[in-house]
Amino acid sequence: MTAKPNTIDEYIATFPYEVQKMLEEVRATIKKAAPEATEAIKYAIPTFVFHGNLVHFAAFKNHIGFYPAPQGMEKFDKELAVYKKGKGSVQFPLDKPIPFDLITRITVFRVKQNSEKKK
Image (tube, rainbow, N blue to C red; front, side):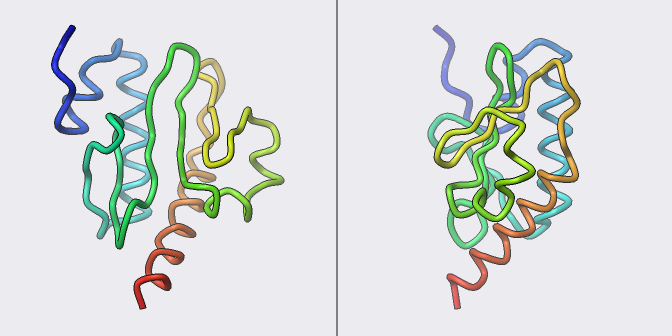
């Protein structure tokens, strides 16, 4: 058993090259949408923090999981309807294009939510 990753770079490095590329694109998309957010590993997965947890993402055998928390998903329910979802998570299949524009809009929405919560 390998040690748990301490950084997003270490986390991404544990996956096959094709998945690493997808994870890096998801990471870059979130970074661009939330430039003031900091990176962390929480719950053993990559996390962006801005006035609290903003969004998380992770790779699995058949999908990339994106975790904007329940309040980050309700507003985008119609667009997320085509994906498998949990209460605060959505699964983007590895064999389909990742909806980076949707990740951007959800992340921007979460930045706004966390900023308002902070006030």
